Each structure stands twice: as C-alpha cells, then as structure tokens.
Length: 268
Image 1: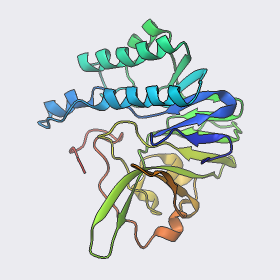
Image 2: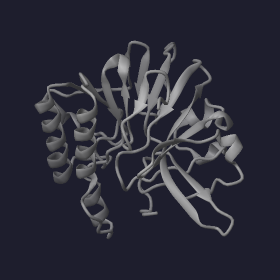
Image 3: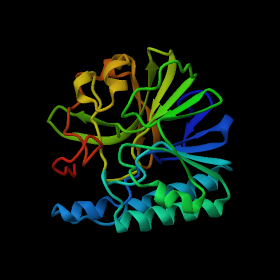
C-alpha cells in the first residue's frame, strides 16, 4: 500500500519509507517520557525506547535506507535534558550510527537541548524545516515558511488516532496516518502517528478546534482528509474520508502530554 505515490507505511509501524529519497521517516518518540510521568505520580513501563528500536530494526530488515529523518520530538521534556532522555537518545543514535546512514532531526517543540546529544553521534538537528527533492519535512507546531512550494509535506506533532464508537457506546482508538492537501501550497500532506506508545494523541474529527497543529486547524479541508489506520495483525487499512465518517467518530481527550504543554496524563 502507498499512502502517497512512492511513500509507503513500514509494516505496522508509525513510520514511512520515502522511496525517491531512500529515507525512513518517523516522528514523536518522546523518549524519557516514563521518568517525567513518574514525577507526576504515574508509574508506567519503560517501553518508549524499546518500541523505537523495534521500528528501526524492522524497517532496516525490509528496506535499505540511506537516510533517517525524524520529524521532531525525539525527547519528551520541554525545558531540560533529563538523565533518562540523554541515555535513551544516545542509545537510539548509536544504533543509527552503526547502520551507517545519514540522520537528520527536524527540531520539535519538545527537543530542547537535543543537540547536546546529537552532536556526539553526527546527527544534524535542523530548526524549522527540511526540504529534500520536493518533500518538506516539518514538525507541525508551526506553519511552513512563506514561499515554499513543495510537492509533499510530511509532519508529526498531532499524534493522530481514530476513535470509532459503535451503537452500544464502545470506543476503539487506534493510531492512524492522515493524508490530505495543504491548501495554501497545494502540496499533498501526510501526518504521521506518534512512535511513542503513551502519546495516543488527537482523536481525529472534522472540527478544527480539536487539533493542536495550526496547519490542520487552518490550512486543510478536514472533511477531505483520509485516515489510514494501523490495525495490529492486519496492517494499515484505508478508511473513507473524515467527512464520510462523522457519525461514528468519537471525540476523545488529547493524548498523554501530546505536545501542547503540561496537562493531566491520559492513558486511554
């Protein structure tokens, strides 16, 4: 399956492979999250790094990437670099260094002080945006810069999931990719789900006010956005556009510290 021409999901992972760039792309790992949750009284298993490393190993068993692009929020805390963040980010970057690939990070709103670790592993941290051969990579907490005319925009930040309610009120929530069009530039838009297992994120709807990113709030026709749902054991499933799903979409809470700032942890 292709989400866009030449761009396909990596098995059942929240990542894509961009064939023309030979690039593995993912976002929103939020490494070190478990330490921050513990400070708030929520003791959760340390699985963020394990999940990220599994993604990398599976991707390299399926493809032969020449570069890895992380579209923001490698780490979790906003205003410091914790001991767990330093240790886990170092482990991830060391694995990627041994793969012999170019690694670039588009700085997300959680990536303060990331460069202190990245520079030791030859990882470039790019502020704002990264454009390669017509593909614009941007975290998504800010809009693309004026004047750019990419063919494709790939972003993170939103942590999209789809919540579907049945007739008796049961709600199933599953991470999903979103594919739409960025109206100001005419570019195809691809929103990546979060790698972080605790960042369940925004339950997608057609209501602009439910989104974190100004790109989705202001520059996209949400009714025409198509979700591609990651279904464990089934792969990635193409769903109808959001405008056709309105009656069964359930509006949930934002995901656990989904990127908008400190908030009450939500483990749904």
